[in-house]
Length: 393
Image 1 (spheres, rainbow, N blue to C red):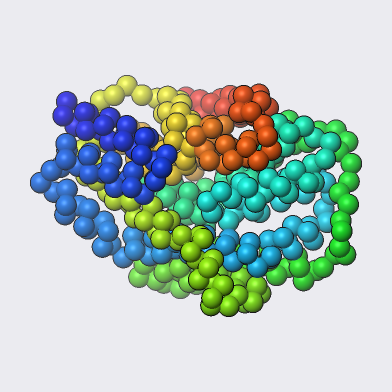
Image 2 (image 1 turned 135 degrees about the horizontal axis):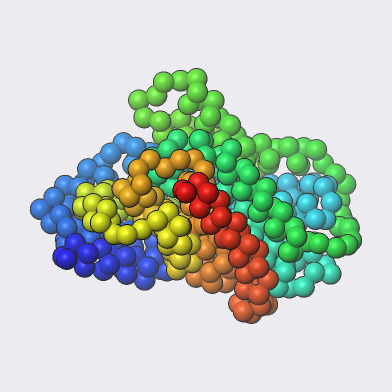
């Protein structure tokens, strides 16, 4: 009984504190859980998690990622990329927020919302809000060099790139839903103020793609003592390239670093790993063995946690370990569906800062945003549950 009390208190603290600081929420929740479950080994567990080389490297990687976004934004490279994507109005409205969304930074939705506002003339503001949130996060489903994807695959104990083929199918389905509900009809054309620049398209696009491509090449061609070394090299290369093409001087980089606050992201990653470490040692997972549950119920929990937390990482760190305990190894299709369930709760909730910031930027009430987003989310949830049922007869 004591362990269950500790678990629910830890989850409550996680949900409440994560609205202000996810890293602090993870550390505090881990401490609460540990006090109730492994008081004698709590400090040793936390220390071993924090001093593990993989943990340190992951924290460094996640800290570097927002710097790439900061450099590209502050030097105008992201503006150049978007301005030179001459692909038609509808594809532009899908792709431009998606590319900006690859750059995790506080208030990032406020970067893509003006782009959607300008390019989406003739579209209602509530649909523009749906476009910005839906497509801004859609590449999270397949982009491996992100904290969301790294933590989720690690928690599920599968390879970083293994679920991508299955998630590609879900991505295409999501693109269809987004197009059907937000972009149908004749929307006209975009009028560009400047001539097309191939250089303005290729260079910033390369900066975004260096990290995942180089990461794959390093991991497939070299035997590394710790796999995160390859990812750190890849992300660093991407940052250096972004700085070179943006002609970023040291003083400017210091200013960008101050705005991006990479230490917050590194602290968050460290907290997540500590929470997962304590969670695994606490014995809570064994308690779940006696709790009646089906994959469909766990899928519902994943969606609810995504909605309640406005995060992907937090639910992933809870749901996937529970699945491993209750049902054994997670197949790639099951992982894809569970991850998608978390994603759907995440794009729906006003707790998610991008939703609130988008609504504020485009002067849309949350209830009007929900009216346009609930239909595609409801269809996606229904289809996901149907597939999950067939995969678990």
